[in-house]
Image 1 (spheres, rainbow, N blue to C red):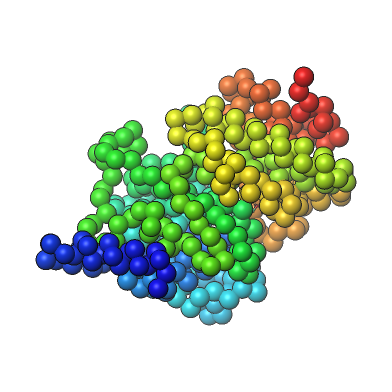
Image 2 (image 1 turned 90 degrees about the vertical axis):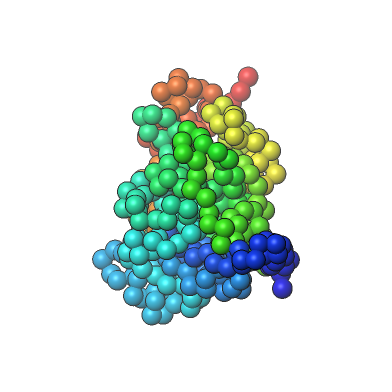
Length: 388
Ligand SMILES: NC(=O)c1ccc[n+]([C@@H]2O[C@H](COP(=O)([O-])OP(=O)(O)OC[C@H]3O[C@@H](n4cnc5c(N)ncnc54)[C@H](O)[C@@H]3O)[C@@H](O)[C@H]2O)c1
Ligand SMILES: O=P(O)(O)OC[C@H](O)CO
């Protein structure tokens, strides 16, 4: 028995004694919303853990599939593999794909959001009214939600739109490596508010007492594997921003590699990028974001390092410089339907900084945006990030 399971059983026993009723007699149902490269890899992990922890979770995990022209749902359920987005990886037989969002979410007490960030609003619109009022969610999405009203974390956007609390998961996690069970670490952040807040004026709907408590232990039980080590923290803003902003830096690293400028040049843009990530968190999320999250957790510097070497943003930026094709053309030629997040995030972050008159405070983020926009050349990067 794992230590997490032992703690869970002890909690259950403690809560049973003295009440006469078996509090904790219900189990959580888990649904993953998204079935792309990372969506499928996380669904595999979660399904492995629901099967390994039958006292806490229903074994069956549902995975929402946004079906394209081919019927991917039936293929996944038939061959237990997602040949489009995660080929060559066997998915657990207790993972069931469904093309219906209401079917996927209606009974789930734990929702895992894992879609490219440009689709979150439409997914939430389709879900609204279908999910349980006491459901809790985790966002694995790497992006920020920029609108004319300002900037928001996707965990907050999901929480606000659905009226449920949402935490975050992010780390140095290239999906194909995690799916092949090569060792990696991740960071989960979960810190539901107590009482009423701006987003929850009536307070959160409590999780029924018959269900195991939704807390750090539960999320470690749900995500931790021998090959996927989880640290659970409370800094949802830091975890979310690390995952979103490193994608802009990974584009810069790819540009530099495309020019074959070598490891020193790449290390320089990574150093400047990490400082801008931390500064962004301090400047715009000062109430909630912990600077140390960027340097101490997998979701910060570790994700920056892996993304600047083996990520899709890095690869497409590098190929774009090498071939002279636009990054959007490279994305559609190379990724077979997978989506870059860095290009959209660079543009969204620039809109936000420009509105605030703060482009010069973030020279690397601004340079990446201008390169993508054709306003400046990659060769100008050193001057653009030079400080006095
Ligand atoms: N792939 C990775 O290595 C990785 C690792 C960690 C985090 N992430 C993050 O996880 C999130 C999801 O990434 P991914 O790799 O699973 O996706 P992906 O890049 O594989 O994109 C494909 C997904 O987008 C969906 N999709 C396409 N059009 C859609 C539409 N109109 N509406 C709804 N969905 C649509 C597809 O059905 C599929 O699920 C992203 O924010 C990404 O940055 C990815
Ligand atoms: O392939 P990317 O660039 O989307 O990055 C993948 C993951 O975020 C790495 O942790």
